Length: 90
Image (cartoon, rainbow, N blue to C red):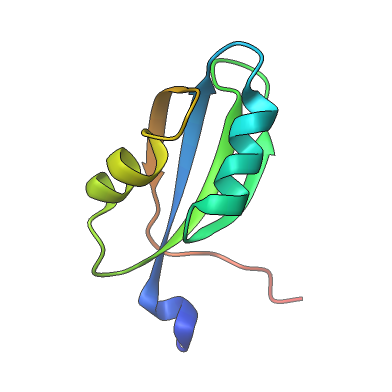
């Protein structure tokens, strides 16, 4: 890939929220956390799934611990680091 997307790393962060606060956390993340692309409510062990596009030279662990885990009403996170994207040729 070329262009600005090639300079970024996509990560997905599953987020567990304090009971009753998933919508508040989602709104806070999309309004106040840099590099967020999307945030979805989910079923199962975690309440939210957020996608972030980080600069390739950014430390992922530091970003998650300082920018996501410290948000109000966040109880736990699980981070998935991605490698090469596959896209449709349509």
